[in-house]
Length: 102
Figure 1 (cartoon, rainbow, N blue to C red):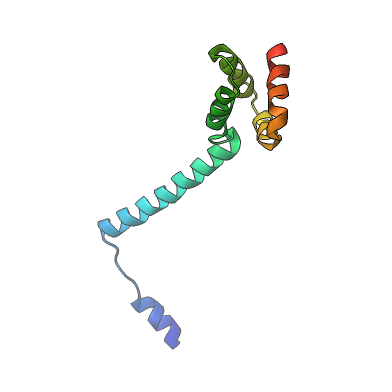
Figure 2 (figure 1 turned 135 degrees about the vertical axis):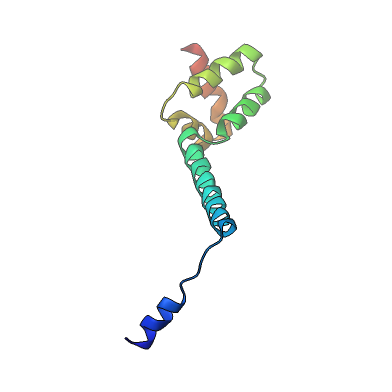
């Protein structure tokens, strides 16, 4: 056997339960962060939170804010919230008006 094979066999390290727990915890933390990123990508992240703040800032009454927020929330692919975020602020009142007139 070559020198490399002997070294590989000698590196057979035993892991303690604590080591295994640490590795598992780190893996779960990474998976949790990845899931959070995925959820944000699918749902629009805190774009919906910002939407409410923006709508209130436009002077809409409570029921109008709720109607517009429901409009965005009822769209399964969240394309509309991405369109909203890409709009120039000067277009947003007309966008809201169109939603409220539906």
